[in-house]
Every structure is written in structure tokens, then in C-alpha cells.
Length: 89
Image (cartoon, helix red, strand yellow):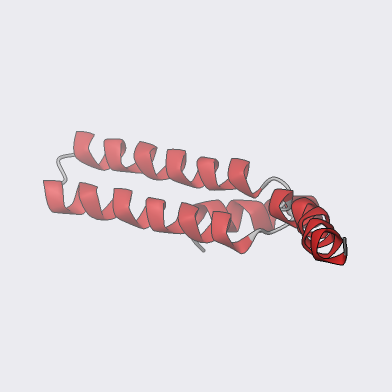
């Protein structure tokens, strides 16, 4: 019986941790990626070459991944801090 309860207890204790993540970091990461896409489109419209456009998109994607991986609690950030993360400052 102990062999059953120990693993079951560990699973029950770990389940809430699996659901944990940064509060709002997914939305903030999405904002960063959308901003990068908009910047890339604007650069392309102004005649930037493909390498520059791809660089802007890659940078935005990396920034979005970093925000998402950070699991930051966006409720604890000011609007200026959120904007700095989205804009890469």
C-alpha cells in the first residue's frame, strides 16, 4: 500500500506546479512577436532587404521566447517595464 501512496502523493503534489507559469507572460510574448512582425512589415515597405526583414522577425521571435521562458508575473510590472520588454529595451 505504501508503494502506491508515495508515487500518487508525488503526482498530486507536482500537478499544480505543472500548471504554473508566469501570469500574463504568454500575452506579453505575443505582443512582442506581433510588434516585431509589424516592424518587419514596415521595414519591408520602406525598401529594406530580405536579410534585414528576417533579422527583425528573428529578433522579435527570440524576444518573445525569452519573455515566455522567463515566466514573469506581468501583474508585478509597470506599463513602462512591459513596453520595454516588448520593444527589447
